[in-house]
Each structure stands twice: as structure tokens, then as C-alpha cells.
Amino acid sequence: MPKSKDDLKDRLARYRQIKISVIGRKSGKTISIPVWFVLDGEKLYLLPVQGSDTQWYKNVLKNPSIRIDARGAGAKFNATALTDAKAVKSVVERFREKYGVKDVKKYYSKFDVAVCVELT
Image 1 (cartoon, rainbow, N blue to C red):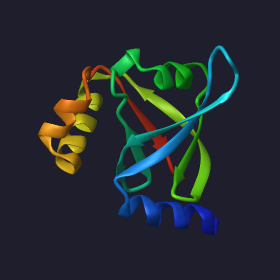
Image 2 (tube, rainbow, N blue to C red; image 1 turned 60 degrees about the vertical axis):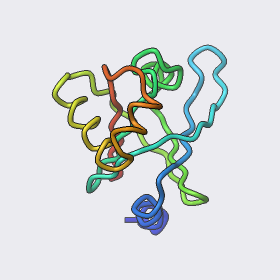
Image 3 (spheres, helix red, strand yellow; image 1 turned 45 degrees about the horizontal axis):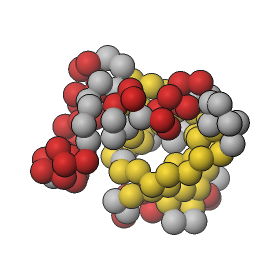
């Protein structure tokens, strides 16, 4: 595994927020936004704040290329949309464990989709 991915995983294990960059489905421009995440082994889970209505999620559906940046350590991956209710519920539970039920309830309004990024 290249050092950059090891470095990225090391940082992902320590931070609470990362920046993702996606390609705008209409503009074709790179859009970067800070997001919360959950790391589980080789998988990184993202939960769109407004579920399937979230703009960056809609962009990922059109172009699955996503860049993960954890304070300077970054790499490009392909994102996979999770729409299965059981899979999404599992991601939501992990977010609640990491960030707390109150904060997840405060910031997230719709739990119908999630995104998985394989870090391999």
C-alpha cells in the first residue's frame, strides 16, 4: 500500500472531520466540503446531512469519483451509494456511536442513504 494511503488512514483514525471533493453534476467543477465520517477497517462511511436531497450525494451518483482529504493526507477513491435500509441504519448507528445521538439528530435531517468508500 502506498504511504499516502497509510498516512490517510492514520489521520482518519484521529480526526472527527474530513474534507471531501466531488465533481459537480451540472458545473463539472470540483466542490469541496467538510463532512463527518466513520472509519471501519478499509471502509469509510459518509452520511449525507439531508439524505438523498444532499447536493454532494447527488453529485456522487452522477460521478462516483471522490477525493478524501484528512488535513493534508488525501487520495482519490470511488464512492458507492448505499440505499438498502439495513445498510443505512447500520451507518447511522455508527455515526451515533462516534458523534453522539444528540449531535446526529441536530445536524442530520434524513436517513435514507449513505455512502461507502473502499480505502483499498
